[in-house]
Length: 255
Picture (cartoon, one colour):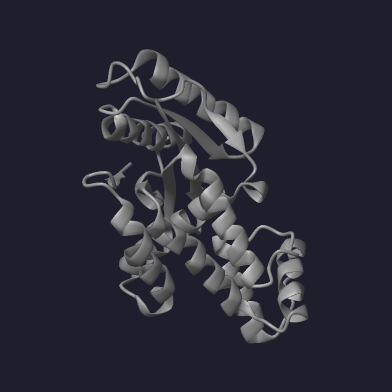
């Protein structure tokens, strides 16, 4: 039996009215490739002199710190300021973060992996309960995982990025309800029946999943605004590294 691990992260927030889209991304890898990927990313960090940073690099950081370097002002946020000061200390700027993101995503080209993407255009679902929207995302990812891997002798472990306790409880309730009761899929035979959580700070694959979700979210914003100039890197990363890993009919538009 093959063991697969599905790493899942979000971009945007249903509570943040400034965000036009809420995105969830799944990155599915064979467990035998886990250490290989982690080592490749560690090698990238070493080559870029980022091993001593000790701060997680998130998708949103790339563009916030970019603005700080352009304005020559330190970020007010303590975590961002640590990144900003570290880059200054090694004589680099925000371009190094973008290169790191690019090289990390490039690793996906070297392995057999799958990506699932779902999104909600938040202003169209103002009257919907957040739990119902979360259920759409969780359920759709579970359905796609079952359909993609049901012909294999496999088990899939799902690891979500750590979130606040209230949302974690909600996610587990939704997950358990779907796994226990089913939907049009009566038996989620390849999906492990317990939803797991981990801190992205110490999880390389969740960090890459964050890059995937963020890149796709920016692509959606660029499309909505019909302004592709300000989102060139997100668009480039999406079509070069992400889109080729999406199985046919796996990207779901919806609630």
